[in-house]
Length: 177
Image (cartoon, rainbow, N blue to C red; front, top):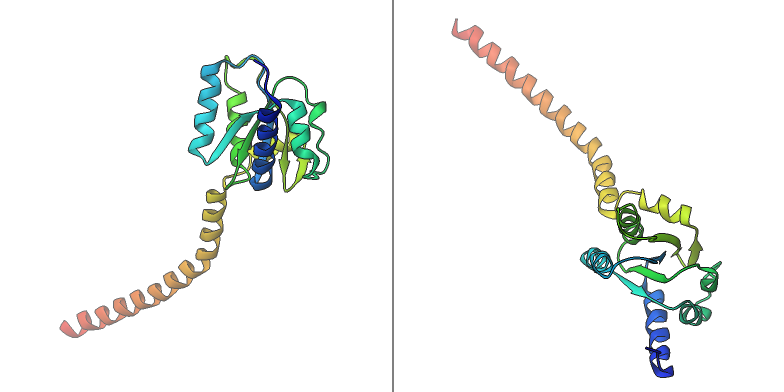
């Protein structure tokens, strides 16, 4: 079923808006991917405040013309193009798509590029991004590092108080004898 001109224009506007508001996007070739596996991928992304959209390359090219995304040429992509968008976390789409691509029985599904900070990124960079800890994990690590000196200081103070109690208890026991 061919798309009308109006439908194509709506798709271009929709994709352009998604690309403007995204924190990161990952382009995939979903050739041979079954409908059930596509739904599985979409659900995983939706659960993480991200989404997956299938777009024709020429419509993607039109959508990206005005956005001036450095180094992006959608017409150079091979196969059928799908885009995983994330609106909260830069790592989420790369992580989910990378894990999904490693599954068995998903056809020739593969990562073909991405966008990060309004610049095109290569497949290797998307894979490297997928290996990073999530934003929550990084914040937890930072908080633990910031909390460590305070915890150490509290332990030192508590140790001094404990020692004082031991000394006083020893004096009390010595006087009781």
